[in-house]
Each structure stands twice: as structure tokens, then as C-alpha cells.
Length: 112
Length: 115
Image (cartoon, chains in turn red, cyan):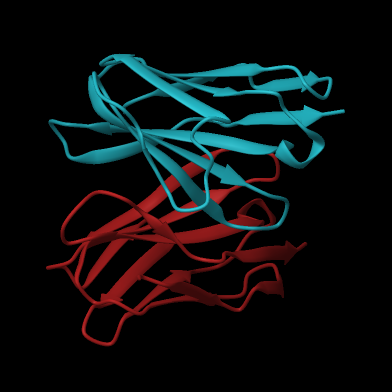
């Protein structure tokens, strides 16, 4: 059974700092990995999706990397802003099937 | 991009009543929809997979008679929480799979509070 863990569970940083969020998964037979953002009481906003054949994806200040063999992904946020404060979730889709397994989440607070 | 809506966004009901939540894919056809539950400060847990025109597949530990799922068309799936109790209070999120882009899109969620 796939297990997805995110470290740290919570993170507080001052504005402007670069930061890295980590996601690890136990079964490397994945189709893709996706990073989401969730604001309090809201649904999910997809940030980046990395196919299993890819190493990284970039969107603006966000960069996600994938090392499938070691079961790890990182989300790098450059020059963090208070508006980045949210919970960040990673989710993996298996190579067979389409059920997503979500990580435990990282609650990020960016202080002005 | 593709849009998935949920209705209602928030519902408060008395214990023992049934609540129906709708999930719609607005600009694409979804042969598969997924229902998740999220408790406060926890991650999303998959409850069931809804397939258009067939019975839903429930995850282990989810009572199919309590959480009724109907996927009558390619754009609509409904989740009915029957005889709701306070422990069913949660945030329910659906996602819809676009069969042409092979991508899941998430709804905005429904906050259920059972008094």
C-alpha cells in the first residue's frame, strides 16, 4: 500500500526566504506526482504535476523535482511571500489505476 | 482550465437527516469521479470511486449504505450522507477525471456540519 509522507508538518519563515518542502513515497511505481495548495476551508489548487518520466517542473517561483527511484519529491519556493501561506499537499498516482494517495501536508506560514 | 463545481458549499443539518452533495464537471466529461473526506488539519482520504453508469467502489472502512454514491451522467456524481451524525461532520471534496486529458480536477469542497 502506498504511503506518502511530507516533512516538515509545519513551517514558519520570514518573507523573502527560499524554502523546500519534502514529499516521500514508499512505492516507486507511480504514474505522476502532483503538488497542491490548499487555503483554510477551501478546495485544492493544483500547482505542478510531474510525470514519472520527468525530473522537474517549474512554474514562476515554484520548482518541483522528482526522484522516482528514491521515492522523493521536493517543492522549492523562491522568495516566499505572505500570500504563499497555505497547506501544501503532494499526491501520487500509481502506474496502474487512477487513485491518488495524498501526503500528510505541510502547513506553511510566511511572516511579513 | 477544467472546472469542477460542488453544491452546496456549506451545509448544517440535524442529526438523523440525510444530506446530498453534488459534484459537476462543467466543461468536460468525467467517466470517473472520486469522493474524499478531510478532517481538520488532516489530509484527504479517498472514500470511493464513482464510475458513470455503474456501482461505486468504496475504500476499506467506508460504509456504502451510509455514503450513497450515484453517477448517473458523465458530468454529475452525487454523494448522499444518510442518517448523518456529528461524527460525519467533515469537509467533503470531489474530483473528476477528464478522460481526454487523463487529469483529475478538484471541486471546491463542501463543509458538512451535523448538529
